[in-house]
Length: 442
Image (cartoon, rainbow, N blue to C red; front, side, top):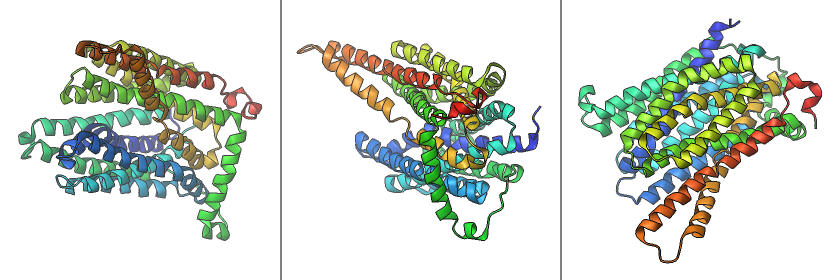
């Protein structure tokens, strides 16, 4: 039985709130709408470059500032204020996408990039509130509950948005484009409204600060960040976990993106891809909660190893998949494991860090998450090009070239196994506090 049920529900509702952005905007409508509407008439590679540049700038900025603003929030006991600032920055910018007209790709990139900064920045302080509302033996379940409600909330609004675009006349829209534009308003409102519950229901531990520290809060935050960075490099357990997490979560994120691209290469249309996203969302809801309970009963380490093993299986199967049925089965398996590995990684990391510096340490954690999906795509691209050059004969026929190209793609997908194997090996050497206080020392 949860000891602080009201606070836990309030905390988990923020995942319910912001997952609408992750699902409807980031994974669902924005990439497609950007190409077809805001970059109308532009070369497809140019539109991809524009969107990629905006994403990269936003991710790099939040990765750089994450540990510093986390340190400032810890020193000032203002996690909820930072959460509110970033959450409403994101929700307002998301709703503002409705105002962007056809062909105005610059405004679309700017609004979207700022919304991503709001989404990512708020997550730092959302994660850091967890130790204040859950006991140590509850963190696996509570973390899983957050991800579970996130899948539910994101899935429910995404389902409504999909229905709006498929049947615009039933909802009073002139066409599908109008429905998609309105979906950005719905996400902004959904995100903003449910954030209110978190701000009111979740308590924040207060620390007494001297007048000099209050006056120099930013300076103190930078100083604390530098001190913590030095400590992390000397604390073997935290350092190893962050490296292991970087590798295997890079593999997870790459697999998620590969599944959509691979489905397109098999000739699936946008309806198939949207349906697969909905499958992941609604299966992810109970699965994330179940994985949280599994972490409590079976052990968090074992459950994380199980998740890594499942993703290794997904990678192997994905490299051999040929039919649409297999694609949907793969979506089901991803839904079963995706929330679990995310939730358990968060709760496991919480065991390794001091409670009074949670925002700062989660700043480093989220920094590693932002720098993820760097190795995976590069590894796939390099492996695919090398395999194609090695296998391609001189003067191949069109059919031979197509078959060899597909085989090279399958080999490149299989190369992601390296990330899961390396991440799993590093994670094996991570020892949590249950192993004794000396395990965190070099």
